[in-house]
Image (cartoon, rainbow, N blue to C red; front, side, top):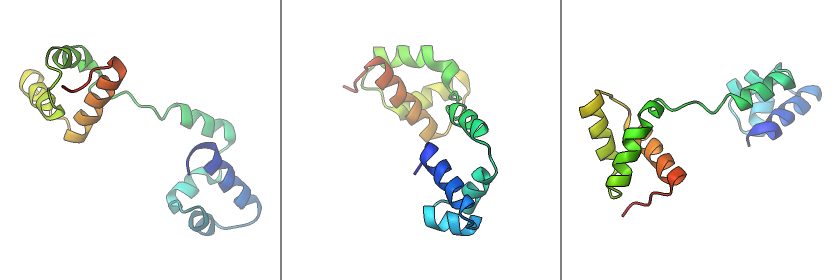
Length: 113
């Protein structure tokens, strides 16, 4: 459960007098999550929802990576990671590179050959 539904459920159960622990158990979220939204006003929650989409650490390298993917469509994310490390001395996590490459492929319609 995410988004406004979870926030609303937390607020409703809070109004009914349940504790943070009970709410977290009922909604199957961590106590830290329930505690985080417990006293948060709706406008602040709306702001957190819009600011969740973070810019990727690799966003600055989109042009060269895009060029590589267009030139070599069969290139794997592991190869992209290796090239980034060699050419730009970037040591990004494998999962970060995989997500970045998958996002670029989807955004620009580049299928893996």
